[in-house]
Length: 157
Image 1 (cartoon, rainbow, N blue to C red):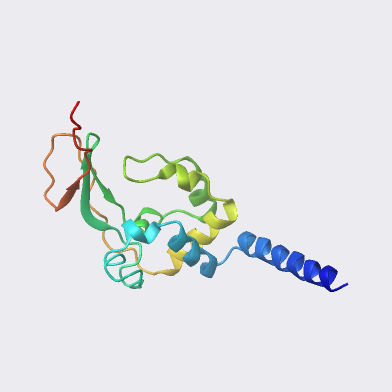
Image 2 (cartoon, rainbow, N blue to C red):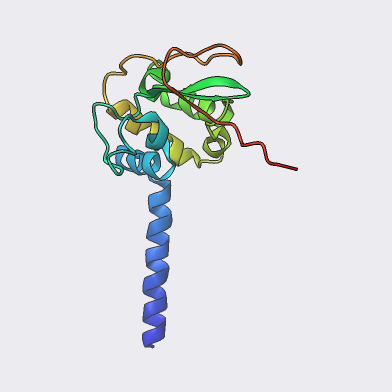
């Protein structure tokens, strides 16, 4: 009997956890933005602070370039990027956009719709968009900002 009660309790907890994953809310969006790594690149100072989110800088982008054979790319200001989108438009965009490295756009494509809607609500809750980040540059064009070269080392034969 005790085992049946424990199993029933675990089943109820599992059901409520699944419900949380389906929840659409600003708080869920905040969690998605953290666990999906959005702040890692799109929030200035996030990594240096050990994961503390500065609400003023949250998801406004970082003017540090990432340079490789594709040129130089920047982590865009997500607040600015979606400022003119409604929630449905954001979901469509998130499911179909393409980006150059190091942005793992395919991970965003794989997100459940409820997480995308929550992420949208969270980004919108952050306030004024602020300024856009620098535009991506083609290969061979020198950036005017600091940048990190992402090129694998040449290995000896």
